[in-house]
Image 1 (cartoon, rainbow, N blue to C red):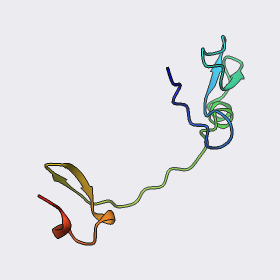
Image 2 (image 1 turned 90 degrees about the vertical axis):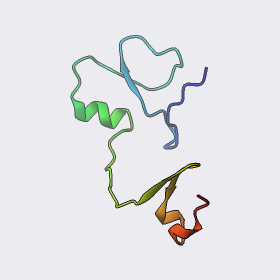
Image 3 (image 1 turned 180 degrees about the vertical axis):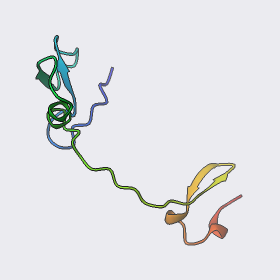
Length: 76
């Protein structure tokens, strides 16, 4: 079974307290650590940015407007 844990930063984006997880990845923390410590050590201390997205439901699924020149390009 794959662990599906993000490792794009060069280390596993996970932290744990207690027993090491079955996959052996992540940073071991002491119970009661602050949320700031958890997010930093788990590699999850990033900013989330938002942007407007337009999409259109089609029989084939969702089409994202930013990926299309015009809605007329859709094969409906």
